[in-house]
Length: 496
Image 1 (cartoon, rainbow, N blue to C red):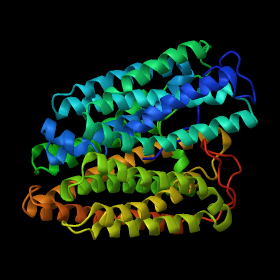
Image 2: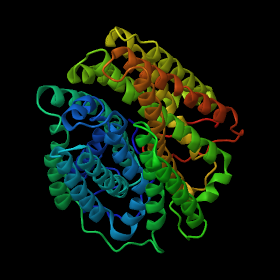
Image 3: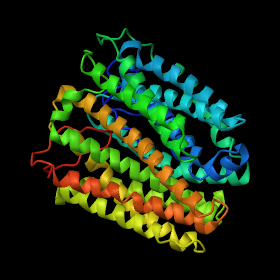
């Protein structure tokens, strides 16, 4: 449910007619078009949350494989996000947006007509690749179309609001379409959206000038990182259904690929993951915080949606209506987190955030199998949401503290990758735990067994806010850099 935070590349060109401070006229229309593209990407992260039980039943997806509906998208999105931003430098932001929209639309069509779990998972992965192409290139066009001043500030404010709003609308839309029509529409609705954005980009954005970036793009590193993560997550997912040779081979192969990835990154001139940045303790600890926070969010939302529908009997529509105000709370609190940081400091805000996340998990774990989703699930989600919204911006702030201006783009791309991969890895591990507990207690047909599994998942996830607290306490005292590192205004004040 988190929006991407990527420093824009510089290869795009401003559309004709764009001005330094004016966001009206043609520039205003372009902004709406690009925000629509970003809205579509964020919406597609959230829209599947409440539709998963219905999709599982229609396509016969095993419980241990259900996580791939979200994981396949996040893996390719996070794995190729940084390299796609660099490709936008070389090929041009306009061209990358158009190619990405075509890939995303093709993946959406594949999801909408999927006949089994694996065709859906592959199509979701294709959507993620398209999303990775679109997001940094679209943000680049926003940055290059509005010069310094009020125009750019207004444009970036709208971009941030749309990114946050995509999560709110996604869960509501997913519930409405799944319950009143078909879950397939949550994917097929992307096709007219994509066509509209393509038409508008062709009309509003001038042709790209030749790229100014030099050097090779680290496609090898992107492929190794994503491939290694896919193998490890596949091993965890299959282990949920039973241990065997596939699990062992996939796990060992994944670890081997990641070792090769680290060796490659030490040798290439422009690595996708600049390992030298980790010598900065703010960067290293901040990325762990982002990783753990994103994992906690994805795992909590995933299992809460299943508890509401599979255990407590809520429909997809009711689940979507329940999630929408929770997402709205996250958005509102996130907008106020900068003021909290300015008053109390980053460390205090992150510690409070971790405590609220833990309390929310404990409330969710206390839900009885015969309880009410309004009384036993929504309160825990609201508390967790307040904690998540409070900690989102400060975590990103920490992860880019002490980084030179010329490396802020790399640091921002790195934390975006940490967020995406955190959700993927944590969900895979928690899903393994949950499924094994459910099977040991009698299988998913029993509400008590299912709730026992989800309760174990929530309690196991408590290690994540504890990890965040440990990293926060280990942060060095250092003044925060004045430069913003995300589309939203950077919080002011000291980093501690």
